[in-house]
Structures are given as structure tokens and as C-alpha cells.
Image (cartoon, rainbow, N blue to C red):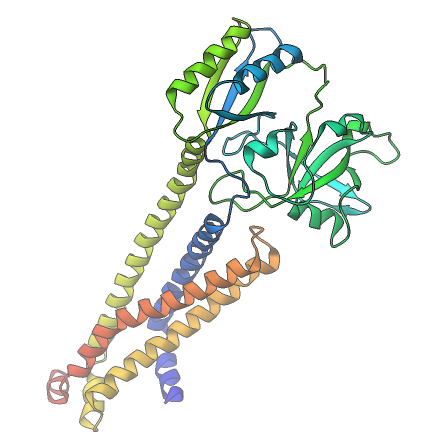
Amino acid sequence: MFRHIFKLIWNRKRHNSLLLSEIFFSFVVLFLVGTVLITYATHYLEPHGFNYRQVWRLEIKAGQGEKMPRAELDEVLRRVQALPGIEQVALTSGNLPFTFNNNNSFFKYQGRKSGLTDTYDADDHYAQVMQLHLREGRWFAKGDDGSHYRPVVISQNLREALFGKGPALGKIFSFDWDKKGEAVAWQDKFLVTGVADDVRMGNDFGEATPSMWKRLIPFDTTHWETANVVVRVTPGQGGALQEKIARTVAGVTRQWTTMVRVMDQDRLHKRRYTLVPMLGLVIVSVFLIVNVALGLFGVLWYNINQRRAEIGLRRAMGATGPAISRQFLGEMLVITTLGIALGVLLAVQFPLLDAFELAPQFYLMGIGVAVAAIYVLTAVCAWQPSRLAASIQPAVALREE
């Protein structure tokens, strides 16, 4: 039977090439969209690795053209910490979670190199505010004041990249960009004190990126124009506490200003920047697939009308209606399989070439979704035309011919 179907397809290769091309391009669109949606959905269901709820961020700015001495900044933090409703305050860098500010670099250890790694500055209370979970070692403490190297805590995926299955605590690594033979400053050599769970601080749909937290030195005499602070508050706090924080900061020095933002609102705000293009991609893809479905339906309908004499002759020779219907469905499934095979040949190049730096399982799941969707689409489009072919009476078809 399949040999006969292949012969029929070959005899009408000019007409079937249009169907084949439509199926191929439909598969490519579904594969790409499916891979993106599966990747986003998988990351969305993964834990963030920290607790962003009940966390606020403060952006404290000095007066125009002025700097903020560390002593005055520490006094501000002490007064904010003393406010009712504040659980813990921590000083950090400007690349806070769910913001558009990034700070990243590459690192190396004995010939092993990391991927692009997010780096954060953090004081001794940062882990308590963000509720990071340590898998190994400890967070920063006052005893690190006398360290000869910059104490750091790294994420699990950075640990695996730099140290593999070997021990990480107490190891010293450095930036990947320092020149060979050039002396490296002590603050650019990093001593691992702890390993934390992987974190996703970019957005809800991003993957866990290698991360490193560098200890902010308490006695550093550096002056800042802007200080970034994360604050964990008790449940139920709102605008009243935000106003108290602003007044407290202004009470230390009238020239400083404070902006208070809720981290969960930052998360929702950044989520929209991912959802909007994703929604646009889905709408365009649905529009294309609907047009392809209509095209398949129209081409099949036209083919049946062109082959009424063939159908009538087969019916006159004893073929039943269901047999005619199965013949057209079989032809369509064979053409669909050929189109999918071409699409799969293209799709497997993406993981082989690491085109979008995604894990291979996402591409495989995208291929599976596209294959299933194409078979369903073509079966639905071929069902009604095949029923039409099965209902053609031989006498009517031959008389028209």
C-alpha cells in the first residue's frame, strides 16, 4: 500500500511540493516557538534561589557633586535598622535583582575558566536579607577583616565550572583577564568562604547564571555618590514605613535623598519586558499556522476536485468510501512525514552548533512538540477533504468526466 501511495505522490510531485514546503516551514516555526516557550516555562518553574518577598531596595544619593563618607553611610544604615518593621539592612552594589543593571566578568582557576559570571558586592548581612541558602561553608563575618584575599561566596554552578568535583572552600582564584606574569592586586584574588544555591536574579524566565558575591570591606574609606541598600521588612509594611525611611535618611544629612522600591514590584515590572515580546511571537506564530492550515485545507480540497475521475474509477472498481478516505489520509501523512524529516534535519543543527546556548533537552522537547503539532494539524486539515473524497459516487464522477 505504501508503495502505491509513494507512486501517487511522485506522479503529482509538482502539486505535492507545495504541501511539502508548507509543512516544512510550519515545522520550523513551531519548533522555534516551542523551544522558546518550553525554555521560558522550565525556567519559570525553577526556584529563584533567594527570597525576594518582603525585600525593599533603597537608592541613597548624596547631594549633587558630593560624596557620602562611609562613616555617615554607616550611621544612616544604623538608624534605618532601628526603625520598627525593619528586620535587617544590608549594603550591596547597584546590580540588584530584577533591575536592568548588570556587572559580570570571567574567572579562572588552574586552567579552568568560568562562563560569564554575575558579580555582586555584599556586606556581612546580605545573606540574611536575601535569605540565600549556603550549601557549603559560611557567609562573611567580622573575622574576615584580616583576610589577605577578597572573601567571596560563589554559586553552585560557578563552583562546578572552576573546581569541578574537587573541594572549593579555601581555594583562591582570580579574574580571567589579568595578563600573564603581571602582579594581581590582593582585592582581585578571591578566597572562597562559601557556596550558595544557584540563583536567578535576572528575571522570572531567565536561567540560573554563575554568580559571585564579593565582601564589602567594613573599614573601606571609599566614598560613594550612590549607595544601594536592601532591606528585609516585616509582613504588612507599606507606604508609612517607606516615608519613615526617607525621613530617617534625610535626618542624618539634609543633602541626601532616598528612593524606596519594592523588589517584588521590580520583578513584575521586568517580567513584562519578557512577556510582551513573547506574546507577540506567539500571536505571529498562531497567525502563520492558521494561514498554513487554511492553505493545506484549500490545496487538499482542490486536489480532490481535480482527482474526481480517479476517485470515481476506484469506486467503480470496488473501492469503498473508507478505503478512499484512508488513501487520502495516507498520502497526507506520508507527505507530512517527508516535510517533518526535512525540518528535523534542520532542527538538529541548533544543538549541534549551540546556536542559542540552550541545553540540548530544550531543543529535543521543541522538536517533539513541533512533530506532534504538525501531525495533528495535517490530520485535522485532511479529515474533511478525505470525507468528501469518500462520499463521491462513481456514477456521478464518471458522468462528469
